Length: 414
Image (cartoon, rainbow, N blue to C red):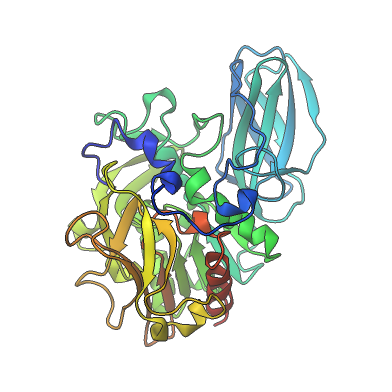
């Protein structure tokens, strides 16, 4: 997303699921409506300590360091797996007992358990001062342990993190991002509620397994052949910031016949470089000869400028992907969900044969429509793009949960 006019408004975007109040989503149960806060017990942010792990991901059994800042003299640390329970905005279930620590100092050494690959967080509780979460990705012991990989947008999470004023969305003079900072919202990644939470929860409720990767892990994949151990790579959230190596390896994976699913919008938009815990940027990929539409099938159009409410998708062509709409009751002309925030649409650089499956006409004004797309390549790759920011976040909504299940079933086979 472009910087123009965003500095004062970016905080509002995370509530985009409710910005389309005039367009009510189908009735659903409690937190299954895709709203991360519905029906959940929340805690006040910890005003005595902040916490963050020094790395975005770890291997099972590896040592990890939890960095602390603040004045807490006593605290407890407990690890949760996101999406597996009802604890807080990240809906975790505890997988360790609370560990009580007196005079913790600046860091706490920990050992990652032999747990399944996934998104986890350490909950730091301080008596009388609230809680702070420190998320991390538990990557697989080897690539291809499961047939599906899910890449979490850890670069983008930090780009939108206002902690310490270190965000180019807050301060245009900022050109480097510290990737090891605690997240400002009591440790919850920016926009997690609206963009990520629903799909993470969907995985658990549907009992499907996947390998989870951070952007760092994707950047560490040597070559596309290693990524080709997966039938499907899913970018479940807002994958706006990627390095050249990430773009290269994903594009080559596609060219080899690998399947891709993008559940958000404004993906692969900015080129960044990374040096350890520092991310430097940023240049639009399309301005240096690599338009994102050539990979994704659609590309970024605009954001809502805090003016345009979310609106329902209208199905345009079920025959282009009948497997996606199977069992949903949706037909050409049917509407579902409430979507927007940022949107994508087909472009001249979209691969030949790219099909528009659903559209929100003129969502952000004349000529600015949101489009859900799908294409296949001669080498057998199948590529889906949601075209709206909060599709993954809506994965628990009626009809959408079936679409996500169909997407998983169809794209997770070679």
